[in-house]
Image 1: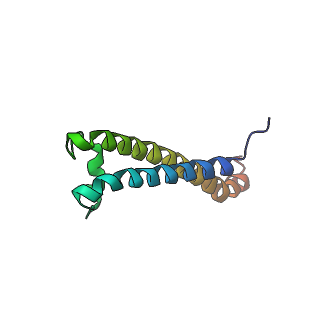
Image 2 (image 1 turned 90 degrees about the vertical axis):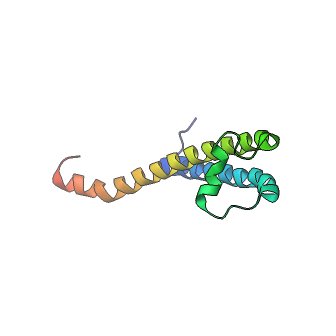
Image 3 (image 1 turned 135 degrees about the vertical axis):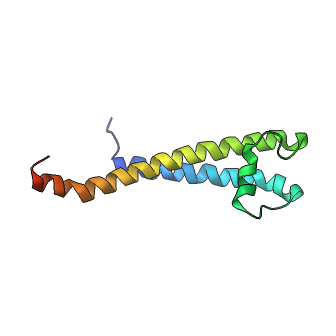
Length: 101
C-alpha cells in the first residue's frame, strides 16, 4: 500500500473540514428558521452553548455543535499541513544553501 502525498492529505483534511462546516450550517438552518437568522459572528457561535435555543432545539443544537467542532479540527489540520508544505518549499532552498540540510 502506498502512502499518499502530504499535499493530498492536506487537501482531503481541508475538504472534509469545509464539508462538516457546511453540515453545521444546514443543521443550524432549522433552528435559525424559527429563532431568527444570525446577524453577527457571535450569533453563529451561540450553538456551542448548552440550552442556547431552549430545550426543544437542544438535540439539533448538539448535533450542529459537533459538526462545527469536527469541521474546525479537520480544517485546522489541513491548513497546518498546507502551511508546513509552503514553509518547506520556501525555506528548504535556504537551508540547503546554508549547508544546514
